[in-house]
Amino acid sequence: EVPVLATFDFQGGAHLSPEFMALLVGLVIYTAAFIAEIVRAGIQSVPRGQVEAANALGLGDMEILVTVVFPQTLPVIIPPMISQYLNLTKNSSLAAAIAYPDLFSIGKIMINQAGRAVPVFMLIMAAYLSMSLVYAVIGNLYNRHVRFSRR
View 1 (cartoon, helix red, strand yellow):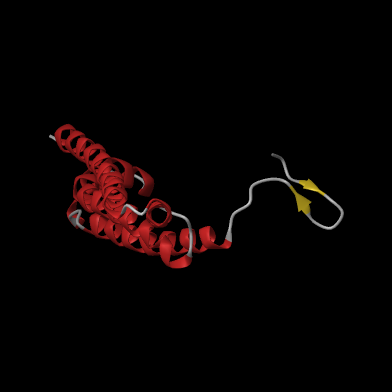
View 2 (tube, rainbow, N blue to C red):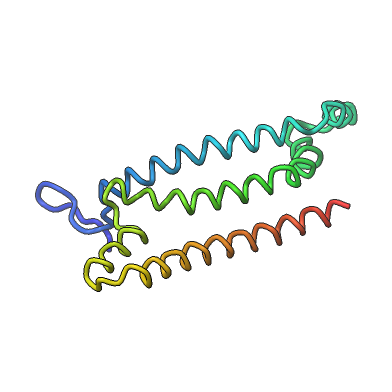
């Protein structure tokens, strides 16, 4: 719903809990640092002669990035990026440490109510496995597309 200014404060709209914000900020900062390092290393893996040759042809900085650097960078950075996204999925289970109701903490509640730990943990493992496999398949298909289109 649209937030409306009431007497002293806004009423309505989306509400983000402090636990969710702590999880979001923590995972974003942690993952962004790794992804930035992956992209930086991928850009630096392009031989300097390639950039100098494009510069000699009179291409601008943005044209050099788009036509020379990025096509050579993508095949290098895709595999570690897939790994980092899988890592992000698994790190989200650390939300239980800040009392955010993620998949793992919901499973603990189910264990307390049902008293059956093995089926609940099997469901949690199946959920994380299926998420990881979906990410891996999509990432590997994209990686194959990038590798084949390059040749």
